[in-house]
Image (cartoon, rainbow, N blue to C red; front, side, top):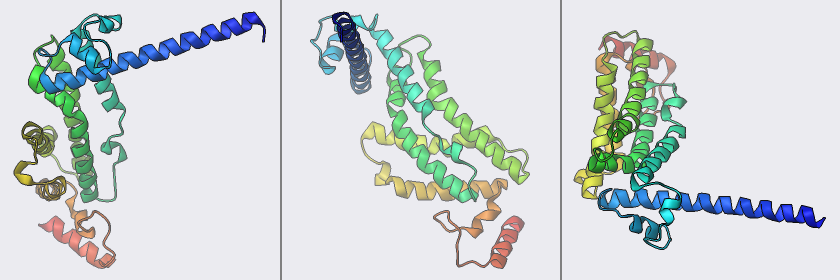
Length: 252
């Protein structure tokens, strides 16, 4: 290799390495800031604390090489978190399944996991929702309105498939998803499961409540007698008996 080409290659490698290091430092600052904001609040967190948590010299001005202010760090952290949530596969993307019970079980398990992922944003809403102009609206859309709207769309599709009219899908979405949100919120606030009820126990009863709601509104619940509590078809039920169960469910 000629000296000129070697010099170009070395310079290119140095620039690439510097860019990677800069990206890594910015990412560490974002992670550190969002952790501190969640732990002790936006107002109480200082620039020096963010730099120290990120492994940089505190009060060295390193943060200002990447962000103009603490508010810009907060906005960037929230936007990144929202982007990460938006690319995750939703349980609703996997529907429809064979029966309504299976769909509710899948939706419930996914929602409990999704609430864990959204917890840092929920905490910011509770603590710092009004601290930055326009932040509360952005958080409400990403953390609450968007997932509830998607569940409402699923309820609407279920109602349409069942030929059921006059179902307030948005109100039902708030009821069925809001109970899970409340469960996770209490766990976050007090640092323990509400009434020491673990996720599986909560989910089992939540599924039965959702099935009862679906039956009340006629949301295609007749199929559920064909399936066991785990959401899979019951091989012990002959096809004729499954039809009788379905007819009975429709009549009731």
